[in-house]
Figure 1 (cartoon, helix red, strand yellow):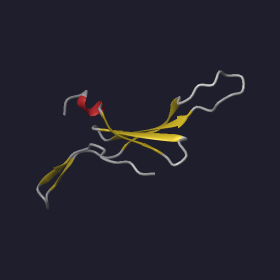
Figure 2: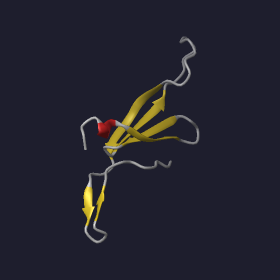
Figure 3: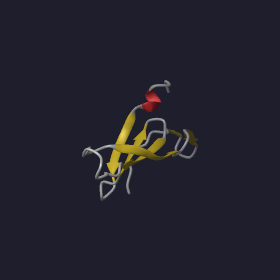
Figure 4: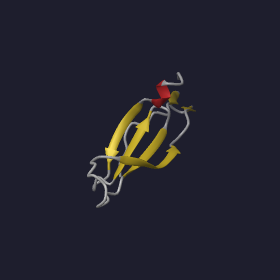
Length: 79
């Protein structure tokens, strides 16, 4: 896989409250964003998220029983 191809987002999913947003990419990485807390002193800014956590879901491998390569792309995220 080309270096920049792995960075392409393949799925996006909000949690049920909209507080968290998760993205998955073609490189198998999942990034979780948390909505920025609003302050009474700040101008109201909607939809701003900060990185909360990141992790590598899985590495590419080969399924010898099915003779298929298992790619690292994230297809779906569920909360």
